[in-house]
Amino acid sequence: MNPFELMFKYNQTEQECLQSVKINGLALQFVLHKTPEIVLEAVRQNPKAKQFMFGSCFDQKATADQKKELNNLIN
Figure 1 (tube, rainbow, N blue to C red):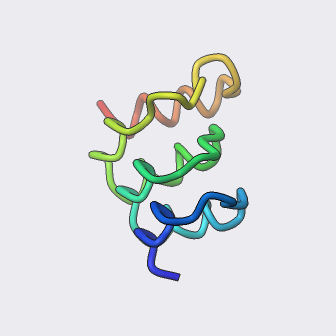
Figure 2 (figure 1 turned 90 degrees about the vertical axis):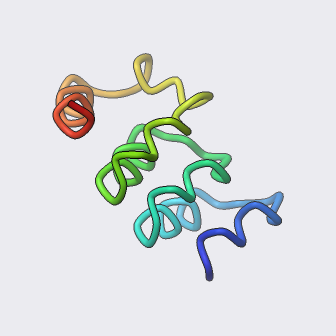
C-alpha cells in the first residue's frame, strides 16, 4: 500500500499506520493511530514528520526511553 493511501482509508489498523510511516515518515499526517511507537518510527524515517505529531498524546503515553529518543532525533 502506498503510504498516502491512508488519507482515504477510514478504518486504518495500527499495523497499516506503522507500515506506512516505515515507508515514508510524512505519512504521519494521515495516520489515525498516533501511538508513541508510530510517531517515533515516522520521525526516524523523516525528522520533518514531527510537525504532524499533534493529536498523538506522545508526552502522556511515551516511555522515558521513547521521549529521549524522540528528543535526540529532532534536536
